Length: 319
Image (cartoon, rainbow, N blue to C red; front, side, top):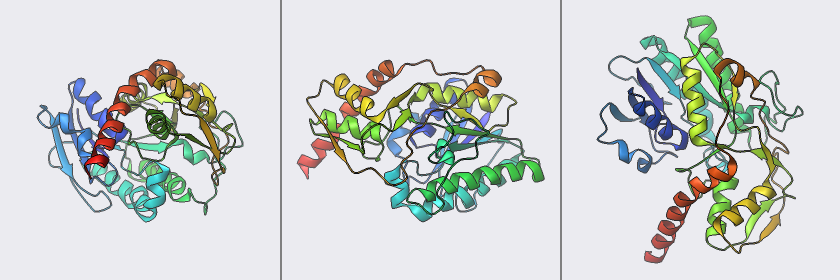
């Protein structure tokens, strides 16, 4: 296949580039580096079958040559980013998604949309199944991301129903691993950074809010299966093993060997109290479930964050 991956220089997008290339496919990565990083794809610059296009997908664009699939992963995805880039987040979820769909329609390509567990909001159903419609504040401090993704799902389904585009939708739950930005505002990179520097670990609220963390290699394998399969989705993908944020903080202190201690700050507005995917559909239709335990995944991720902290601290000293 020849696949286009928008957001290809992002955390998940760059891992998808690696996976498709490793399976012998050609990859065109599209990104404008709003939140993605050239460093995430620098190792692919001379790889046979890889091409990069710098492009803001909220503007009309095309890709020369044949395209078999378009995977839309372009969007700010962390609170730090989408609160700072509110209009941009809404634009990429609306105009950006439509431009990617138009490309898929013109090329007669399959289209896969990266959606998110945030479409469920602060859920009243637990664990969350794909049939659950969500409990979302449309005007809250996270609304720009939640509603952009909900609109994107509706747009994808509209193109499938009215224009015959062959579509897939994945709802991604918390994912982690190398290439996450150290300062992206999410709990796991923040905890790693604080623990490696020996700083206090900041937990918002009482820390009893829950999340489920999936290692990135498990996730991208699931995405690959969804694209190849016949299930249109939406399909939840994530790790169904649920833990509290306080437990995660303690695990990261342990894996880093840090002497940091946990301190609590005021709870964040509209922060979901619990989050765990029901992955029954992914198991039944794709034969997929995560295989890497959190204990293993955190150890695999540690060297990356050690390098990031060292690099950031070195840069700070030079300046």
